[in-house]
Image (cartoon, rainbow, N blue to C red; front, side, top):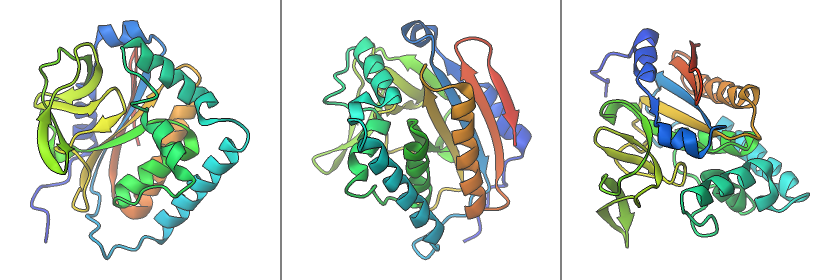
Length: 255
């Protein structure tokens, strides 16, 4: 079925990213935090028949990379994992119970990274290869701007409990990504909501790469470029805009 929505121009993607905001309370918690935001449109809805060969090769590379890394150090000693564990403790979360997305993937890689859909499998592999927490959201269901805030505890978060879709709420003071309709990801990069999750039919997406002190701007930018490279292998005509949002002066560009 043809998508009736016109593909966004790069300038429209830039305008969307320009509205993204990191709350001062989050900046005070971790002044070294940066978010690389990547907005894309023109992705080709995959469906089950879409060839997965390159994505499977990327997954295999990521699994091998994780095995090599964990052969020389425990996962909690990986520098970026350790930094995220400290960040979780700073807002009251217990990292042994709610693991940041990078740590969760590294721990699963030995038994095989999860297979979800092409977009999710691609960004999970990039996350492991570059040792950076990375999430993806369906841009077409976003309401307003992406915001990183410390929650009041009243914000809506749609998730699954005991196999049923339920409406939950973050803890007061918890760091969350949200838009005007509610929380899109709890505990910074722990669990994504259902409303904005990527599916086989996603044609526009927002990717968020979370960086703390051990990771340089150059390293997180390289991870973003690798992700864009693989997205363009899936959809050569994809349009892309990126923005590196820091606690100081924001920097942004398009590709």
